[in-house]
Image (cartoon, rainbow, N blue to C red; front, side):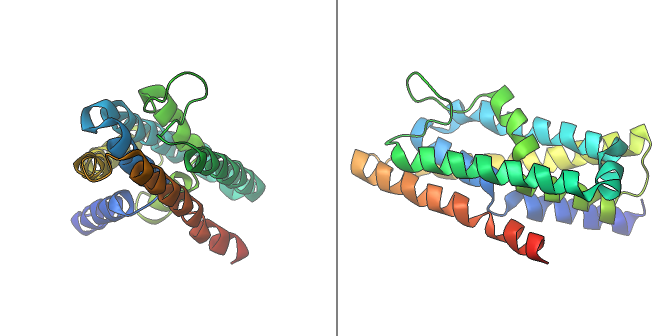
Length: 201
């Protein structure tokens, strides 16, 4: 990639990582309910899980989606359904509980990494990155692009967890926390609107 393309790719990575989406909304909620430190496995799972997805897309999944677009549509549909399920659970809970059973606890590293594979925004980001900025499909360019994206993604997502942790004192009362979680659930649903608009287009 040329220097101009690298700068454009980094800007794309930052903008797509820092703007609201399912990952950032969930991490913000985690920061409010569990604090910054307890949310870090979730943050790391997002960054590393998305990096692994980028490698997979760069090394062949993107071409597979081009050949069979229905697979891409199915993945986005499954991701949208899962997000609606998460939003429903979040709206009904007093505190964040993204894993079934037991006491409420933050999403762990493996769960957050696995979530990237059903996150519609993550798929759009990954496919767009290679369709627009990274033309090479050999191992080292793909690994380099995925590493850069993950390094930019990590502090961007962590900022949302930190912001949530700063809101803990404001939302210390259970009634306020329930209201916050319901608002986050509504925003999770709204985050699907760009996906629906893309599908219609």
